[in-house]
Image (cartoon, rainbow, N blue to C red; front, side):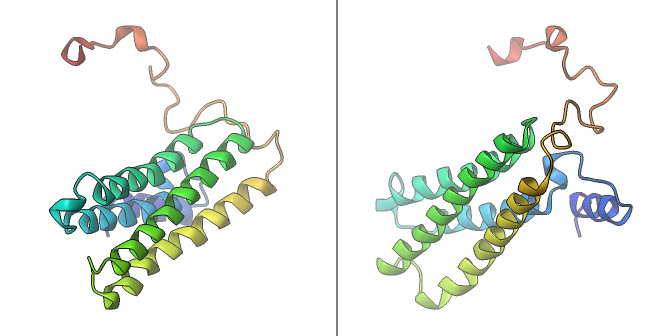
Length: 165
């Protein structure tokens, strides 16, 4: 088990709520599925490099980016919106696997083992959306994260961005 998984398990076992998006089980499982889909994209024929492979990579990144961005929003309705966008990207990836099967880019026997973790991500997204919907609006507004309390995260004026210009 990697360090991130250990931290998540430790937080859950101690009754703490996840403090970053990386602590969320839905993000962790979606991240692994994203890696799988990147491997699928890398195995596609050269003729699909700028077509299907590119589309798979964009949808896979969108899957995890939307989970992360939603977690960073302060209101539960915004969090739900981003989770639903993530779910849309996931469904797109499942359809991309269908395209791979239809075009014989991957053996049909490989489809079920590839789709299975995707459907697991779908279950986790749906469960997280149900959880968010069950929260009272006042309880679900996060003004800060315990993970970042006491840091200078909000003070961007001291950042040295010379290497990024």
